[in-house]
Length: 362
Image 1 (cartoon, rainbow, N blue to C red):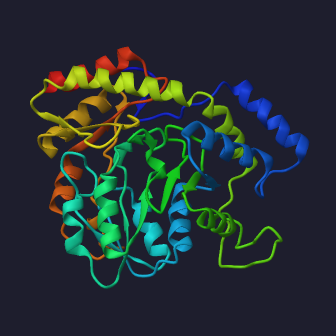
Image 2 (cartoon, rainbow, N blue to C red; image 1 turned 135 degrees about the horizontal axis):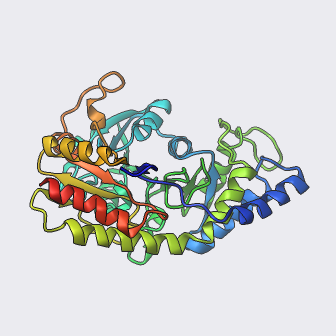
């Protein structure tokens, strides 16, 4: 057993001295929040790096989804996926909307567009898919359905910075995309998130919502809340952003290595990417059965290796907060899927050791 545990992920961090240099600007300006200069610079650099039209930096990814719902003035049913983190559903409910669960494609693990239309009712106002593990959704099929039924599309793109479709950032799709800059994500500000839209008016509205509904003259012109990102967090984001392309390349290499080491194991299957290019932000493995998964977790834990069952259980089974809706594929996959450690500082030797433990077990 190693002394230091190997967790499912660790934050990618710039050298500390580079972060400290940015913090000196904060101390010199005395500005800690309220759309400070570093927040604005982070937004500008993100737009340049990812070729985005706009980026509204906010306190976290959950608030980003809430802001998107609020900006689009949605009230009613929102069709979403059950294979996600609880925050997706929490944001829908906090904004007074009702989540309706659409089952997933067992290959991509994303919402299955072929199942969406059967769930549309007169009360449906939007579709809220998730780019699961950074794997792009079938954005064309979803857009076609939305246009046909006059629905809005919000993408939960929490995992998806660095993912692309047709040569464009996946964050450009939908009426609004909501992403996360949490410590576990490819790019992090410790805590943070953002909203992205092509629509200039929506972009301005999102900026007002994150600051209590204030306009540029500090008049309150609409309902808002405190969704601001601080200068401290923006500084970390700016420091880390310099290394984004290196981190993306590193994830891809390590993902491919895992795949090479495990793909001949008949007890395992893997997420498929049929649309666009994933950012390789996670390495999920689907076991033949839950029993085999539990055995693998036991053996890995015995070596101080801590994988994680993303996403378990399937959110449609959280009956204390949602009304149960059957989604058999999501429920089945959620019981058998395990994310293995994958991050910048994880060594190739550790990846080989993790794969060997799993292969030896079966």
